[in-house]
Image 1: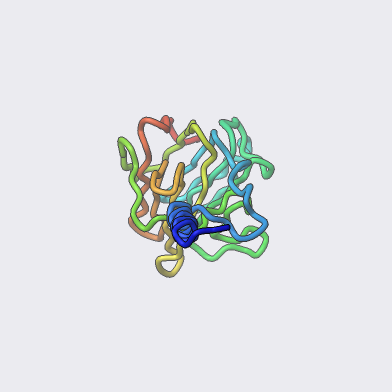
Image 2: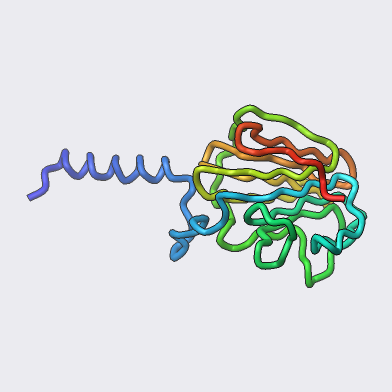
Length: 183
């Protein structure tokens, strides 16, 4: 037999759990993010990049940010996690794009980056994380996007704005190592 106080307590616990899980995925997607990436490479190109065929990166003369799983020496489709480009892209390579198992749902409006460093020039970042990253891309204007890479619901690994002008990338210096951009 349930007492009235037990029902009230149970209801409060369910509500409390719902509030504390902004990570909640749509039904059937409980494992999302589990296989996204604990190690990733970010290629930040605020002015575009020349042809880097030896790395699997074609010429793209517009601002963009590419995300790849692992610390690969080449950037292959099977390691591709997502990107955002500051231009119209063909249907074969839609922008923005996030791999389905990497999509962040119901993220916090405010989130922090530990030991933040901001760059405005081309950069390659190698990030190593204690748990798999989740990615959110928001359209904030015509061919202008905000990308946020979450390590937890309120902790970011990186945040970027990619647009035709004023692209920036801020990352957690204690989680990511900056290298020269590929050339």
